[in-house]
Image (tube, rainbow, N blue to C red; front, top):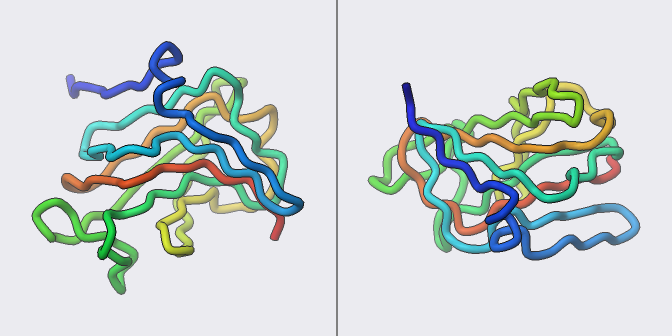
Length: 145
């Protein structure tokens, strides 16, 4: 059985540092320090549900300074090989929504295939990487188109 790294609610206050809202976008910081991602899922379980009532919802991973997106929607990993990220959101009713769609906004954002609200809020985010990679910052976003 693969080992699962979890950032549980008791530790979440260490990583969930801020939630900012403007007229168009809500951002919740899940990790504001370096986080190693790999083939085993890294779990983020905030104390309160993550907002997900807007058109676009997803998790964004900021690569280390100087790294940028490769042409094939991968990021340079620890060993500089291309690393593909995968994520899913667990909703309050325990249903799981895959986040396969990608967008680049200075960070790689993973979103559901269908835009629109995710009912009831998100209780957990899981992120996998095809190889070792260090994320400088991880956020959850909820915004209008």
